[in-house]
Length: 475
Image (cartoon, rainbow, N blue to C red):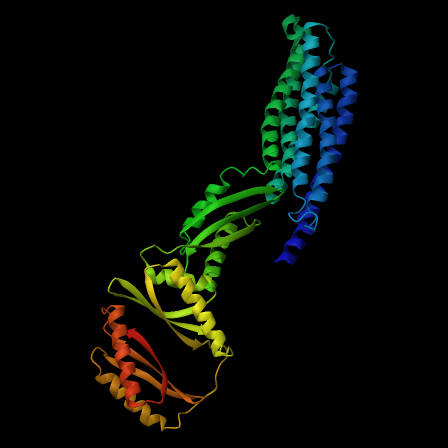
């Protein structure tokens, strides 16, 4: 999938993010010029504060535009996790600029309220430019929010928050101008301070929004987990069959992408392929929650219970990269004897194969002191498909005899699909046998062992017997 991810990062989404960031930059530039001109002509601190706000928005929009262009570059050797953090840095710079602007607005407003009166001219031009500002900010904040949510871009979201707060702050400024006009027209002195008070309200709104945005950007920069993400992943992973436990869920945000890694605990003696299939299901569950997430999952085996001796023997063998089967353990006067089959490379010399078996025997006795005797039967590990022929003995005669033996064996209800094949110098037999569905597996195993013994007694040249046991009523 790396090719697909690279094409996504550098294709249509990147162009869409860049286009909306550029349109935001141009809109901020137009509004800044308009507000500066009208603010100077009217002497309105509310409008001048909005002009300063828009000016910093223009700088912030420029930073956003540059950041989304860089952040969407694919990962490289120097930046293996991509360039997404640049978006968070951009949002942090925007937040800092907003707070600096608010400090200047508050200082100027307090100066006009208590130390230096300033005449404000609430003209139609002032009202007009603020209405234009509200209209433009409404449209561009919606466009930015849409793209930010679509691609989980914190830089674009920061821009969108800026311009949505501009809508509210501009409305407050208009209210302040209206109150100043009423104060002059109706001669109400107490309303003449409405403009600096409106500026203070604007500053308060911006500070509140900026602090919330600032916390999120700082959290992303210091790799804090997004709120609720770990709990969602934990709940999804817990429902996957085969997962016994999970731990160390680590989640961090980088640009629009989430990076997730954790460990799942699986049974110790399952095949590697089974473990891999469980991990793939877990990964799919995480991607259902976060489709673009980069997920790393470590699978760890759960140690068998101390009382489960057979499973512990299998676990030791698997840990040493040995394949074993038919593991049995039995008590002899307080000591435990163990028998099992060990599959080794058929090309090994006997002395080398015996050496590996002895090494495994030593590991088992070292970890399980209660084991006194380990008897290992060495078998060649099958690596290729053998060519089979009809057995040299008349196959139909053999198959009929085997079927008769099976049907006369107590516990076997019926049998079918009896086949005998010559593989090299050996004869391999396979058949399907039907049993009562309520029989336990141990009883079925005993019957098939008895059946295999009878087959070999009738035909000593038989090398291997494979009996497929099925309940009555099933095909």
